[in-house]
Image 1 (cartoon, rainbow, N blue to C red):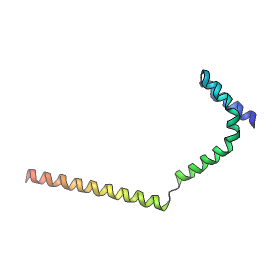
Image 2 (spheres, rainbow, N blue to C red):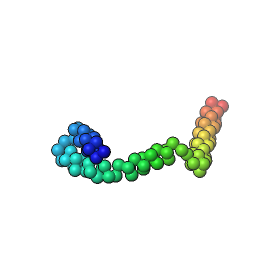
Image 3 (cartoon, one colour):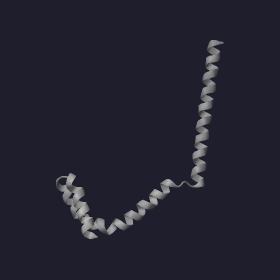
Image 4 (cartoon, one colour):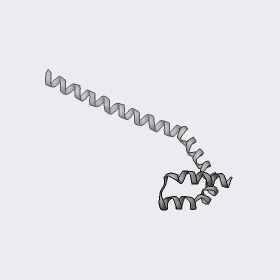
Length: 87
């Protein structure tokens, strides 16, 4: 498992140059140790992005309604201006 992770890190460093590549290779051992924790955090963040709570949904709906109201008022004002100008 560790060899596979080290090989993957080495392959990833092919595009990197100089000191960056050396630092990446040196960090390979740390990557292996924290890989499980990072994977769990990534999965959790993905689930948070896909799911929306009721509170978030209500806030988004409220924001959408406010924007629609602003646009409606703006259109009404524009129509009034046009009516005054031509009428």
